[in-house]
Image (cartoon, rainbow over all chains, first blue to last red; front, side, top):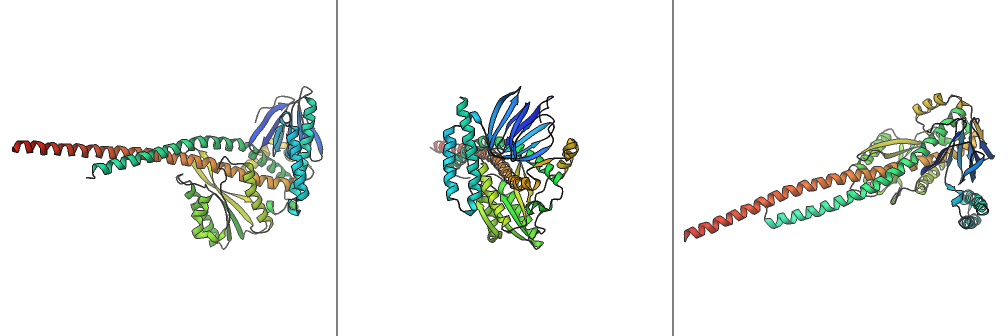
Length: 142
Length: 297
């Protein structure tokens, strides 16, 4: 694990296939299951599930990087913040047309899903909706 | 002494074999590199996941509502064995060592009057186990990791296991796979994935390191996090096993093919030596015949 500089949070974003990010940041905002929460150095230990949404990393008061995650788990303690995400994409790389296509496919799947597939289809739908939102924000930025 | 033509054919056939084995070695070496990178890239996730499981278990203590996946069904009468092998052979002792370990385990369990079920990942494992335990093989997955192991493939296997567990078809699940140590060494590893077992020594060391971590807050609640974390943990464990196995397979194949190439080389040397000797002997005897013929005139 990287040494923690003073007043920094050692933020790690890990996906099943790779260690996506390992960086010291001033603050990181994570979309927790019960609402977004910001992690500053000295944060109380917390373990939470993550809903689909955007993680923002802040350094010197500005967002340095935004990442879209498809859900997962987050652990924060005074020194570090670790997010285990099932899938992570840099928001700058999201395209709203891809997201729209995924949403359309998810809507269709959710409409035709039977009892067994319902939970999975609804989850996919939520991910796609958040993805469209994240990608939409992306097009206005540029 | 074998005649010259026969020897010549033999040499050229061994040469062809050598070409094939050395090509296979090259292919395995390049695949090994990719598989090894993938296996190493996946380690952080599994480690963090384990740490998180550790934190939550420490805090939650003996959660009675945690569910059977964590605490077990209270019995170990039916055991599911996940046997991870490759689809293709020519990789030395890679598959047979897994089969041997599985067979020993199953026999020991059966001697204990436990019921066993087998889930095969990879065709070779099924081929080697089906004569003895054919009727207990529940399912075989083939073609996994053809172009690198995908998380979705692991998910497919994990979902099947969860489905079976929820249907009460087994109590304990163990996965047998080759752990990648280095390109020439694989270690047969048997690890229990249901009920969850955490590496004990690691958990303790971690707990002492981080001291205050004893008072975690949970959002939404321990139960809800566990309900998601446990299946996710299972997925990751299986994914990891598949990655390790795939890297091991290519490593094993590479060293097996390296050996085969070297052996073919030795064989070619020996055969060439015999060939040259018999050629010389033939020439000498022909000369003697001609000379003695000329002298007789």
